[in-house]
Length: 203
Image (cartoon, rainbow, N blue to C red; front, side, top):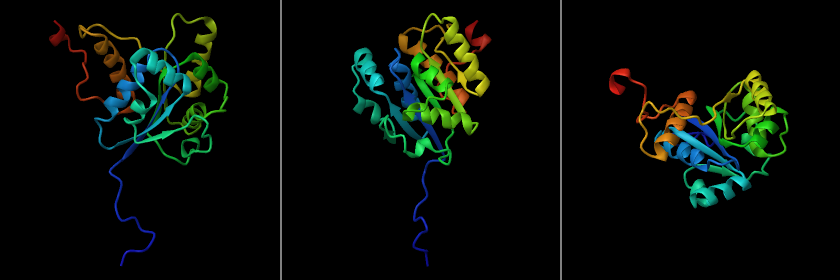
């Protein structure tokens, strides 16, 4: 006979990924990351969408917070500092902030964990898990660069969205997907339709 506390069914998910969307320009990076991660049916998606992220998404894409939340399995208010994402005991594959504002990047680098986005990122660093920051700014001044060095020394992966052109992109989405696909590679969750360098194909 099954014990009362024994789970009746097992979760179909074998990996969890946290996606943060900050207010930097480039909301489409977060959107496409969520869309492409949904192609992996075994990955459970946890979304943190900041207030400024909501505003930027609407201004740039006409998307509402509800549209982003539909792509995730779980969503969390930015103020929910006591959520499970704030604990190292909640195991994940990693976290991506896409796009990552300079404000969020700087807060993470200095250990400022007064909201769930920066606290969850801090957890990734202390637990030695993957933290990937798609920092969206141009140009960078010396303070930005020094902050990036600090984060790299702490174990974060800095992945500014800098697209390649060897795949002969035809649309803006081609450029976006090139960057997102590289991030998926870093997570160990490659996109099946990723456009990869092949000298014979490009010749």
